[in-house]
Length: 73
Image 1 (cartoon, one colour):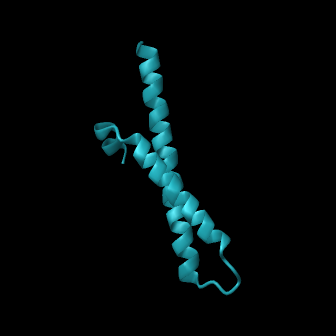
Image 2 (spheres, rainbow, N blue to C red; image 1 turned 90 degrees about the vertical axis):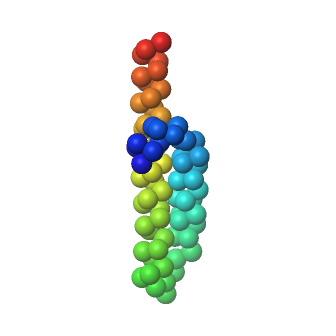
C-alpha cells in the first residue's frame, strides 16, 4: 500500500475510503445482539480493522511527506 500511495499520490481518496469502511463497520457492530451469528461478528470486525489500519497508515505517510517537504523548503 505504501508504494502505491507514494507512486500515485492518491492519498486523499484512499484515506476517505478507509474512513468510510471503518464507519460502516462500526455501524454494523452497533447492530449486534445476543443472537448475532459468529459470521456476522467476524464480518463486521475484520473490515473495521482493515479500514483503521489503512487510514492510520495513509495519514502517517501524509505526515511524513509533509515533514520532508517542510524541512527541505
